[in-house]
Image (cartoon, rainbow, N blue to C red; front, side, top):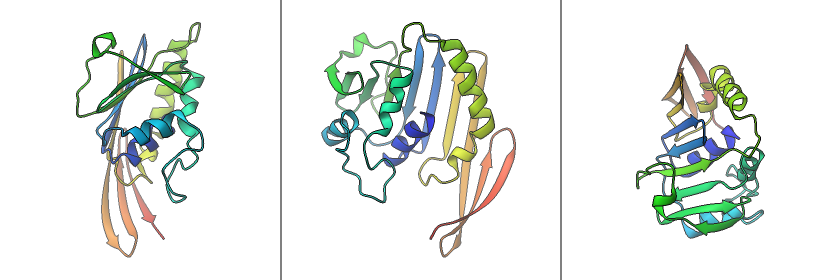
Amino acid sequence: MVTELLQNAEDAGATETVFKFRPDGLLVQNDGRSFSEEDLVALCSCFASEKDLSSVGFFGVGFKVVLQICRDPVLVSGAYCCRLERGTDPYGLRPSELLFRPDPEKTYFWLPPRPNHEWEQMGERFLERFKNYGAELLLFLDNLRCIKWEAPGASLLYRAERESLGEGAFLVTLTGYEIFRWLRLDT
């Protein structure tokens, strides 16, 4: 699910994505371009993506993975503020109905947990995965440079810097708990 939300942010040209784990849900925000009507239709549909075969998420089914933890995700982006009933049917919301104050320059997904979901344990699993794989998530993304994880009592920050070495070669420096340097070859 985290990788799908990061891929959506990457496709929107985002440079930063923040995951805020709260007792009442997961708030994911990015600084990519706002959703268009076509983006909303593609998000709510299967096999209706405007992406070509070279893009991540071509089939338009990836976002539905959030339905594992959330029945009715909320999208706030540009002109859109809506609850996506079962991930497919958008229903308009007023900003006053939100449990957070959105910045109009960002895109948000609010994922309230399903009833009786082991939410606290889910947060612990997310945190553990971010600790183990957070930096590597940035390795093959071109736009995203920063991923943050915020939760009560825990926060993580991962950054990527890319240096072109010419002819599709990049030195990628990933920082978080440790510093990693990778040679990335794009063909």
